[in-house]
Image (cartoon, rainbow, N blue to C red; front, top):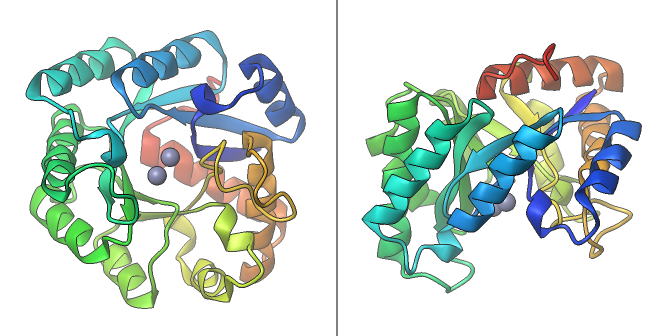
Length: 258
Ligand SMILES: [Zn+2]
Ligand SMILES: [Zn+2]
């Protein structure tokens, strides 16, 4: 089975049952559904408690931090503590590509998320869009290696990759690694040590080739994994085992429980 370490089930327009049965038929499990607002986090926890093979991450997306308050983080902590199926905090981070929240609000929220991940001993899912230097500075201050850090939809270059690896972060690849002109990402995906590698869809965004531009779904994480297996020169079955182990370790999931 191939895990999808990052999807937004609540943002997919199709019925979630159909989405999950298509994922199961494609050999995709588990699916970690990522909340981006308080409502979306509640939705994620509900999906994780209702459907086998679904786990939740809870956070306020950097683009949604303009109105974030300390009370909102108290609420987030309550939600995170409410279920053992909440396996990560996030997604959080810095997004300088979209100008929806002031940078200082985003940074404040990133620090709050990191402290929550530390307090709860759960993984931190980091979104970094055109903010590499600042993201790494804040993480260096807030994450002392006491909880797993996942660089979701990794978009950096080789020097960022080596810094992330030297800190023990996980590197997660999404649909863009399949895009025709993205030789750089494929080159990096080829050299990530096996025990640091994750895959994701970020559904409904970032559909891999040949579905680029169309709504994405967890079933298509298989296309991302196939690209990784090809560039790494390993059989897909071998990579599947590696990805399953990494997902279980990073998120503290017992995969035998489903
Ligand atoms: Zn993201
Ligand atoms: Zn996302």
